[in-house]
Amino acid sequence: MSFFSFFSDIAFRDPQDFEEEPFAVFRGFFGLILLVLIAAGISIGMMIYYLIHSRKNPKIKESERIVWILVLIFANSVGSLVYYFVYIVPLPEPGKELIESNE
Image (tube, rainbow, N blue to C red):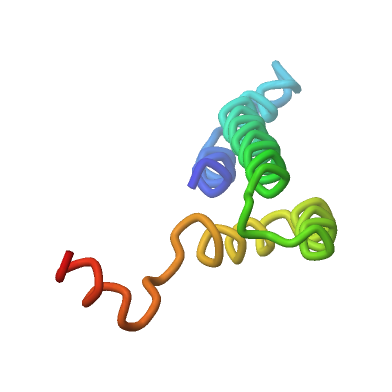
């Protein structure tokens, strides 16, 4: 949204404004750069969390652990999403709900 508002602002400006101040074009990029930096920080933070979680998770075998660490490093977005649904929020095992409700 910031990207499109930047270019729509340029389209409706008076061309003489750019002759007086050539760097006025780049003012709109500040918001866009800030959003990219925030997204990159969140992405790196999530990757570190998932790497630590995969290293300490007792449900993962040692051979799978190496694969998950490589997947989380090289396929960051997709790997994190898959890891989240497989190990952090697993689906309940069939029949386990019945056993827990009887106890």
